[in-house]
Image (tube, rainbow, N blue to C red; front, side, top):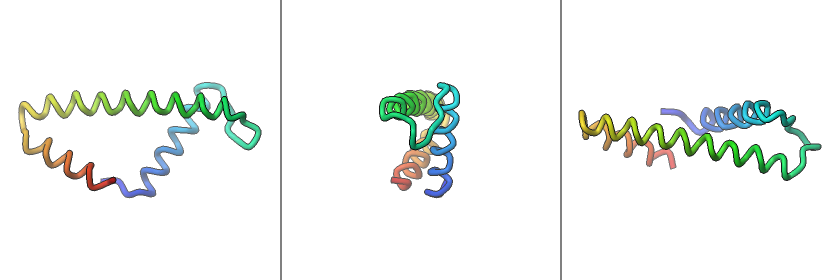
Length: 79
């Protein structure tokens, strides 16, 4: 399980990689519109990751429903 610092570092890296992919240099000179575009793209990526996890979990559930319950319980403890 990842701790809060690890999660924050991963999100920061995701932000920087996403901005670089979009050709946006983050910093104090970056406009709110550009920052918002990066945030929107990050949201799209996180939604896609969530969808992938749901598909994987639903496939595992057919095989092992106990594993799914443990995973859901562990993830809910992160919040």
